[in-house]
Image (cartoon, rainbow, N blue to C red; front, side, top):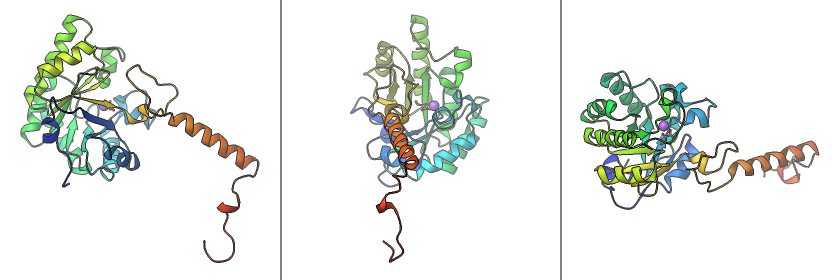
Length: 270
Ligand code: KIV
Ligand code: NA
């Protein structure tokens, strides 16, 4: 759409004013995010956040397409990126192209994101050469939770730090327009940001990244039980929703709701 930020605009912001990114999975949340953010990510975190799955491993193309379509209806300004789900791209460049093209065609998103570093560089180059802008994602890559053995901070040892830095560099070299850095020590976030020519978008990777991303439901405080260190809660919507639902339940049980103003009379329509 005219006036919408594209992957090229995002890339050009390297080293400039920090890029603001949040997830969105629905039309109303997309409208709220669109008013203030540069990048809107339809993250596969929707599997856990919306569908109650234990990890992102069970997320499907159909789920990403359904939520991507909903988000597109509320996104007019931000650059819209859709996550490629686990199993939709790892076999090789051709499988990745087929599924990325489907995500773009069916949702109207401007770019896709996929997880993995050096071993995904060939795939990223293949997609970019064929018209699909790609955002990378290194460090903690949640789709690999079963081989990583949990959601731990990555790159703490020198060897691991070098490996993650090499991953980010390989993606930038392959043509990714930005790279998400998840759960890295602040020093490594800074090093990679200085090293690579495209913007880094951090989540738990420190202040020096070229931008920041959070899961919108996390920063709105919609969950009582998920409070990782890197999430700042800007609201307590979960607590507010709990009080509102409790108040409704009490008023229904005591016949205080509906009140006169919520009831239709028999005269003219109000
Ligand atoms: O799925 C997601 O929400 C993400 C971001 C947190 C980067 O990948
Ligand atoms: Na994701």
